[in-house]
Image (cartoon, rainbow, N blue to C red; front, side, top):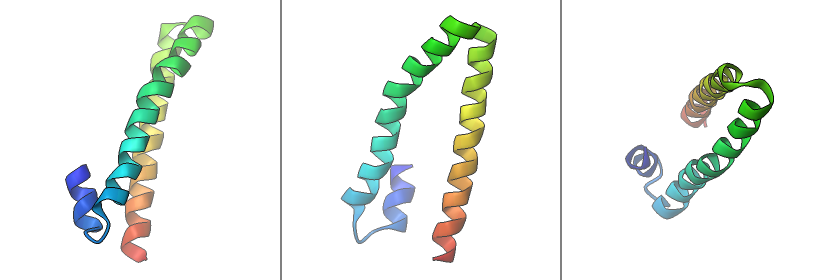
Length: 72
């Protein structure tokens, strides 16, 4: 992913990769905390469904971002 980001933004590779890395680390921190709370309250099947929904949502946002970058 970092290679693709740098390739799209060669004029500012550090700034471009810092944004993607922030997302990776924020997700790695917040995801387990949030999903642990969901598992505690609603059980593991619901937690797995929430994780799947979050991944589908993230994929949709990546596609949207890609299209916006190609337009602008």
